[in-house]
Image 1 (cartoon, one colour):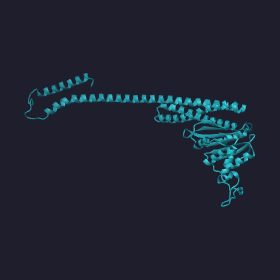
Image 2: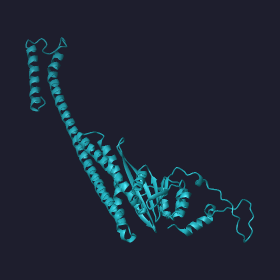
Image 3: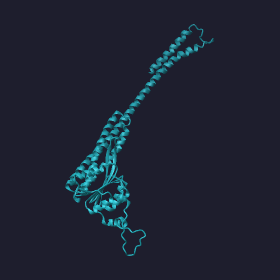
Image 4: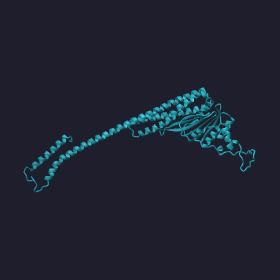
Length: 387
């Protein structure tokens, strides 16, 4: 139940709670009680900010009212005992502090709900259970996983949900519970089960989307797509984040099941929670398998990239070798043809006093000399495999 002493202390500090306020400059007689005057409503009570999604009161699983403000919710819950289900999206600090004062929420849990970016966990503060969940949804267009954060306060007569992100869709959870009043009348624990079930069911499309991405990546790896390494890295990051969201749920649900006898959980509700625990275990195993598969694919991709690089290097080496062989052939023929060119060039100078210029056998000798030199060079280069 809510802390009455804490509520009285807050009422003493806040005229809104106590119902009176001293008029300005009104003298106060020592020992005399102050004159009651109408309290001016606080601005937060007259207009509710959009962070409050919905506040509903239930009795025996049936909706009895939908207060427009937190103050009306507090008042009606005092007048008509039942269960309050208050949903908020990215609430302000003043709203959470108001809820903390009314429902005796622990300051550490309130601080976590304000700051967000918490790991999935389950903590009990007296009669209040504080649960942090990481919801997920798969976005088809960008082919990525979007994660949201949900904080749930579960008390004897209230459920407070604080949502950071688009997932999950708690309005669908509320409709489902209102359509099954026999389950809703089991109290706040039944609402917690429905929220857990919705979060875990939301993992199934994500698992299917990640599996599809994984299949596409495998195909791209063996096709040798150049951008596949980046895609593997991005999907690996999402799978790691998904693993952080699902793995703690296994221990959290086991902790809930361990407290069935201590807290007198309804038998039917126990069966529902066990079913959620089975789904969480299956999902966690699939996510672990995804991470291992991505590790293997990354190794295979690295191997294929190395093989492709080796093949390219081998092709470059072979091309370089062939170029060297061509250069050898060209150089050999250039050397062979250089000898007669040199002799012919010298004797083409036509100087008067040039040796053997007027020799009768000079021309045949020059031809023979060029032939001998060319043949010798040809034999040398042929033995060295340059030709």
